Amino acid sequence: MSETSSEKTLTNEKKLTKKDVKKSWVRWLFNNMSCYNYERFMGIGFLHSMVPAINRLYGDNPEEKKKAMQRHAAFFNTEPTCGSPIVGLTLAMEEKRANGAELDGDAINSVKTGMMGPISGIGDSVIQGVLVPLLLALAISISNTGNLMGPILYIVLITAIILGVSYLGFMMGYNKGSEAIMDMLESGVINKVITGASIVGCMVLGALVANYVSLSTPLQITTQAEPFSIQEQLFDVLLPKMLPLLLTLGCYKLLSKQVSSMVVMLIIIVLGIVGGLVGIF
Image (cartoon, rainbow, N blue to C red; front, top):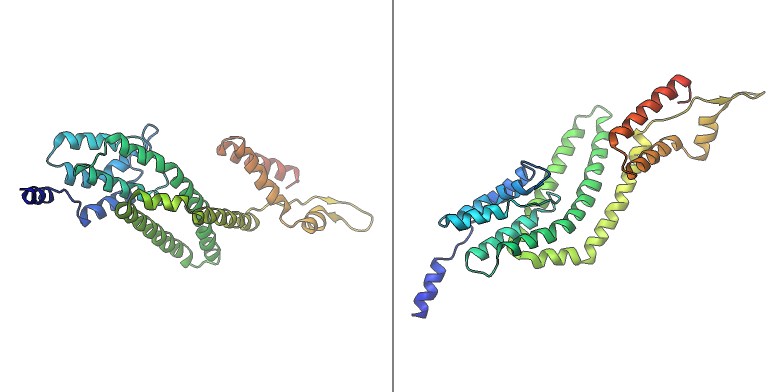
């Protein structure tokens, strides 16, 4: 009798196929910000990525299917590439819940909410803060010579990195669960990566400022011998690219005081026009 019951349990076990899992990953990759809004942020995109799994697990139970769709349309926000393990983990939790595990909707949403913040911090620091500016700087430097390989190289590299990180993270979340993600978050390696990424990011931004921010002054001081150039004989001697650096630091200061980026741009335009007319810049 027990063997028959065990065989029946195994027969009724609901299991996501590899196609279901990959389909969910593809949906997350391309639609994570679908219907992005101030109420739910990425909630609708998250739900869209969960639909293949929901159909597989709860297709024969309309009430549970409805609850699952409502559950995953809730507020969610993280960095899309590094946040893919959360989606994979949620698939695994829904699979266990459909097979009788003691996991209610609140528990699943609590796990999602608890992980989206830390992972978002890592993703924003590494992907948005370092990787994208670094690759753009490389591509722009190549393109300045008229080489078409600049934009092509950027597209190929950023696509390969995002696809690789997103897919591997998604499968890690689905196959290994929350313990693997928490070990990754709590390990000292992650902190070292973030610190190193911050240093590299500062170096990249410094190089971008030196190469692409242009500001100089034609002012001269008349002397008995020959005119004294403030730009060439003072600023460039003390600190080359001093004015571009001061301009960048001024913009950063305004932005840190919650001044709108549009306002900062208008200030730069006004200063450029007035400074050019007066002869200061």
